Length: 98
Image: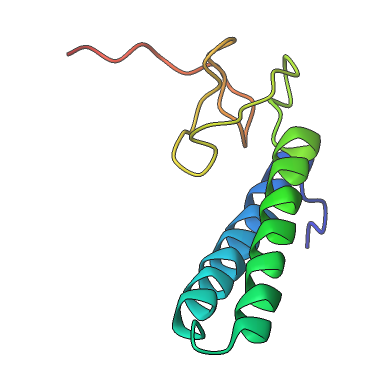
């Protein structure tokens, strides 16, 4: 069994979890508008998680081959926009005909 997980894959999975937590804390902040203390707590948690998302994105969500930071579309893309290699396997991606 292979227990090695690349930094990009680990960063992508952690980013998914942080995005879900950020969304939940933002919704809870909107629901608890009648209680300003709870609203402030959840708003602060939302900002903290957002900062963690940016940090994880810059730290781990890089192309394993060329090292380019992929800020937008990390969860959607399969190939690096710069070197055109698969982000998980590292193989060269063939050009698609459209």
